[in-house]
Image (spheres, rainbow, N blue to C red):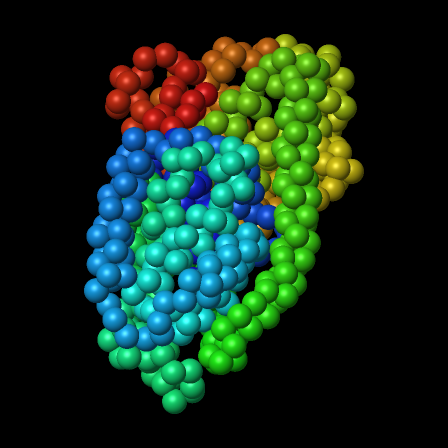
Amino acid sequence: MGAFGRFRHTNIRPAGSDPASALRIWGESADTEAMSSDLSPAHGELLERYDESSVTPLTPRERLVEGFAAAAFLAVAIPMAILIDGGEPFRLGVALALVAAYAAASRVQFAIGFGYTAPTQLIFIPMLFLLPPGVVPLAVVAGITLGNLPDYLSRRTHADHLLLVFVDAWHAIGPALVFAATGAGDAGWGDWDVYAAALGAQFALDGAASTLREWLALGISPRAQPRLLAWVFLVDLMLTPIGLLAAFAAEDAPLSILAVLPLAALMAVFARERQKRISNALELNRAYRGTTLLLGDVLEADDQYTGQHSRSVVSLAVVVADKMGLDDSRRRGVEFGALLHDVGKIAVPSEIINKPGPLTDDEWTVIKAHTIEGQRMLDQVGGVLSDVGRIVRSSHERWDGDGYPDGLRGDEIPLESAIVAAADAFNAMTTDRPYRSARPPEEALAELLTCSATQFHPEVVRVLAKLVEEDLRARGAQAAGAIRPPEASLA
């Protein structure tokens, strides 16, 4: 298998200790969206986290699981190397050449889906034909270790991660046993059924070892693993015919297997180009987030209440988005939209924003234009923030169509905008404003329920109300306007 890809993946730890959050991140990052240079937020988060986690030691739980996996692997692989006869005789020169070629192939890190894979299948398959099957698993361990050695010596990877090599080598056990049991060793298409059985054993044992390890060490649900491993298995499947052709050609001239290395080098060129696009996308994602935070700071500097209010709306809106199961990209839209929903008020005179009494019709016209101004500002930034601009523009639309600026109604209103609108209203009602005092959360909740399906999206209100009610029951409605649900502050 392209085991280096899973090695990269298993080094990435979930944020915090919430398995549900980890499952969301891993699952979404395996989507086909992550195959493009326009990274999903979750995929970008995983790639950024890898470099941080690889230089740190394993947690005690990970060290225990990895140590057990290493001991189990050696308990199987060493007896195989000693007891299994048959197949090709052991030739030291051929073995060293194959290990070195495997190490070189493992250095080709091609970004796919949720992590990285490598074209090691090009070398692994010839190993099964050119070495005694019993020693193949240990040869794979040697190849992975040698390939990772520069990272250990330069301290880009912590020495603890040597334990992961053994989990990554479990894929070699199944095919080696199949070759030993069938006596396959003479290269030829006549044994295609044996090759198919060996590939099936490779995927089965590799999937089982990876799934068990990530469940025990990281708490990732076994239900998520087939989706996460699919990309790596697909790459191995596509490289298998080339590996077989290389093995057939090397039967009479073993060192001719090195002829596959130019193909691995070509993949390395593509991998570097792919990595450049990913790096650019990561920089762009950071720029979008930095621009959003900067605009939030500018908004707070212009009007302290509006800035603080926007940050509070973010907390509530993101919790609602999570409860409603929005995917990672839409969740980011809610987060950015909530922070910037009032950014257009920078263009509104402060005497209107802070006016203690009722606004005149002309003043209301100026206020209502702030969503259009906010979209215009974000369109100038472009990219992701252009999408956020559409959320900002619709954040004061009403379910019944009486909102502004476009009079959208019902499902015409983006769900992200509807979430921001409800969170905005609840926070506004439960905090002091220039023209009135804060209302108790019970009253604000009752107002939201009254306006459900007229002003606000009914499903959004239902979810928000459930969050507030759960918190009020848990905390006894302690302080008006300072309610905190389990995940974040509601006010």
